[in-house]
Length: 81
Image (cartoon, rainbow, N blue to C red):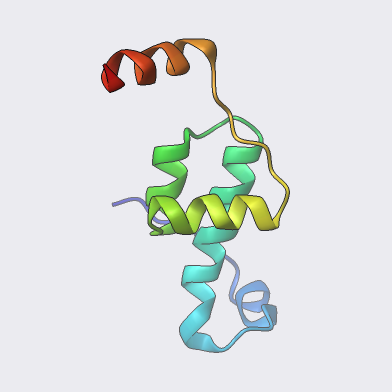
């Protein structure tokens, strides 16, 4: 597992209870990277440690459009047959 180093002063400045900081920072990173197209939905969802539904809702709350290509649509249609 990879780790990200965050300066203690910055980490302590995050105005969330200690027990929520790590999870919230993962969620924020996941949303940001997904919005930029750097992570796929599945990988961003895994980083956020969220279910598909939870991550869809999170993206919806932030008004972040889903990345859905024509190739993915074709795959979904083929799978549904």
